[in-house]
Image (tube, each protein chain N blue to C red):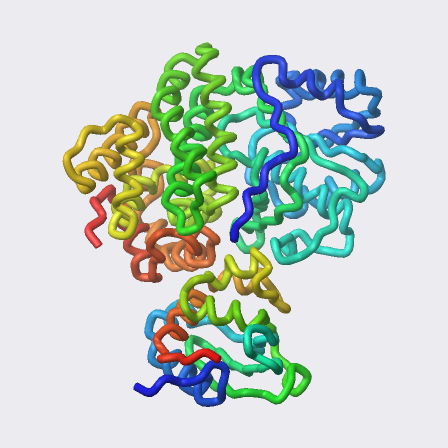
Length: 388
Length: 136
């Protein structure tokens, strides 16, 4: 038995934002950041909500890799304001922050770190959630994951609850149009990692497989294109859908070791999420292929890599990922991120310890030992081919 | 090796010995400190609740035995489920963490702490699978 959890409604396509005019409610709290506000999206969303007859307030203090403190501040504002809708507007950080703020608003008796699939939160007694992604990457708009940074411990808390899946998710391709190329690349490769790890997860299922493969095909076709030409509306739209499809896929299967390694690296060296996860993909594919070669071969086939054996298909897939990363001016090794070997080596124990503790370890096709995690970190730093 | 009946005192003793031979568990749980009550609730031939006390400490099992009831011994964690689900867990048909997510098992205690040791949890199940087991 397994469950496939999605938002009740996913609204997509040009003009999707206008769906907000039809939402019934009294007070909406928009959770976002100052960059999004500066782009004018908040005013647009607020206008539609007001047309729906709602009063609107904005919490725009969310920061990239946001902390528990920001969430608590947002929850305090929510308790004063009393919204019946939370509107998460932005990238993964804004959406994850909104989910956590919503939980603390409805359940002031629990702490952020206690959000877990095993606790009945009893949400939706006071409010519901609308998610509106402005980047095409994390899939948080449809997932039950909540990633919050514990700044004290320099650790990403990978929290989750099916109750935090948005009620309505609005996938409007006009919103990511303003993304700069670097953000397009960083978020796009995050979507790729989400889809690839979902496809090889031990917890995969027919539904997540279909969405993961669909997303991978779109990403290989359109990500480079939109990176080179940010005005390419068709590619933008396709990438926006692919990110949501990948989100549905991984949320209903599981992330894997590239995420475990990436979350650990990102928390310690403060590097954007997508970049830290995707840099490990060529290494984790090779590592995982010992247990999931046929799965990777299927992915290779889906993106038209010609091969006579599964091994050749895996080789081709790894090369295709590296080629994509290079086309996007993304690093293909950790040292290309500007981290010194001395610094990296001195933090290796912490990196390994955090990776082992990651939920990405649970359902990966091959569960690494501490020594294997250490080697993965070292090989990925040096850009060496994984041979174990 | 003769098959051991699950659940029984002999089975949990064998489990303790296997855990203490499992190097992968030892490494994955080297910092773990915490004891469990593993409880099989009645169904499919199990007529009375069976409670195992298992004390896990720094990659080793310090103690493991049957206790007369869930109130007879306090532990940091309680992992419980119907006997039929324990059978599936030991036979590898249910993953211990996925079993929790799908409400096949119930955990009392900090899920946050458990989630940091998922590999250790998986190794415990692999250990259980090594014991020649006879079910009711």
